[in-house]
Length: 177
Picture 1 (cartoon, one colour):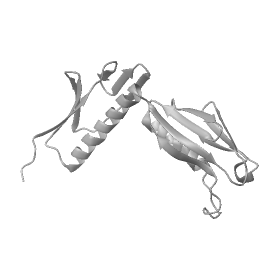
Picture 2 (cartoon, rainbow, N blue to C red; picture 1 turned 135 degrees about the horizontal axis):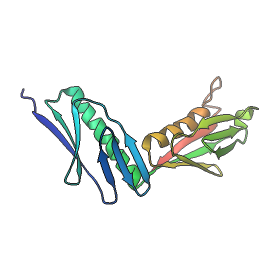
Picture 3 (cartoon, rainbow, N blue to C red; picture 1 turned 30 degrees about the vertical axis):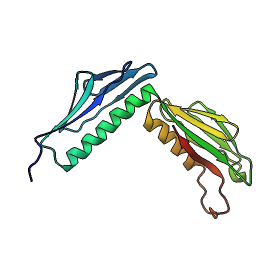
Picture 4 (cartoon, helix red, strand yellow; picture 1 turned 60 degrees about the vertical axis):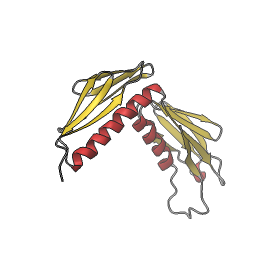
């Protein structure tokens, strides 16, 4: 079986987005700026004719996988700066009405299952959390920060030691944009 000499992937750069490639890949747009360092030795990142070009010479299986991963990260950076990421969550309670407040880089959950001490979840990076009634919206330009903030909210209301069929209280993901 013959092996390809060069594996090449291209990512088009939309208008209004500026990509700089040095030690790290920096993407600038109207919503802000994102930077990320990719230090996989076999993947070469360059910029040609309005495209970001990723190349691997004599790729092995792991090199092909890393090429796809880096392509996804750069694409997510571009999508975050053009459209942004939004996750919709719902506050569910049957037994005790809980209060959710977002302040600074922390979300505080009070009266969860009648507990006296409030639970908290960390807001990462530039993600923004808005609470309106029983709906929580997490928005931002970095997919990793928005996704991890959403996961922190879900994990903060995880129930241990009780039957999950009876106690379904918590904050759950209901939709993504």
